Image 1 (tube, helix red, strand yellow):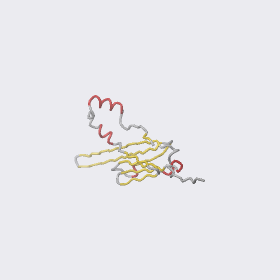
Image 2 (cartoon, one colour; image 1 turned 45 degrees about the vertical axis):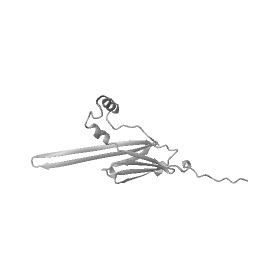
Image 3 (cartoon, helix red, strand yellow; image 1 turned 30 degrees about the vertical axis):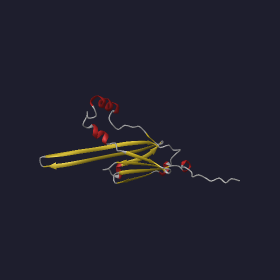
Image 4 (tube, helix red, strand yellow; image 1 turned 135 degrees about the vertical axis):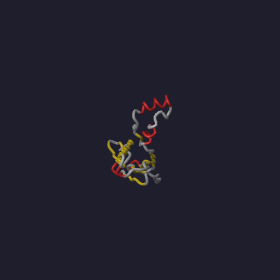
Amino acid sequence: MTLVKTTNGLYPSLHTMLDDFWGSNWLPMRERVHATVPAVNIHEDENGYKIEVAAPGYEKSDFSVTIENEVLTIAVEKKEEKQEEKPEATRKEFTYSSFSRRFTIPQELVNADAVEANYDKGILSITIPKREEVKPKPARMIEIH
């Protein structure tokens, strides 16, 4: 399984160029833009793959996990609106956060119909089982005649 290269930042090559010229703190918002892409752990064993996405502060309903054309897409979209009213003023604040991560899932290796996802305590866990025919087989003893 391989990670599909995607970008979430605005003009990533521009970010790289500006980093090279001014250093990594050229824009205060830069950290917040990149902070919206969560860390991902990928584990493989003889039975399949497990992807863990560290995404605290979300609800299960914020996530979308899809498989299409050998690509597993994990996406989040969260919108919040807060309104504070005082006698002298009204203040509204909008918050919007989203991210998307994509992984290539070769259909000849995994059983895409048996993929499962679970969100618990800020961790989204996705289990992708391997097909039976690609799992390692135990050594077989051959009788000598």
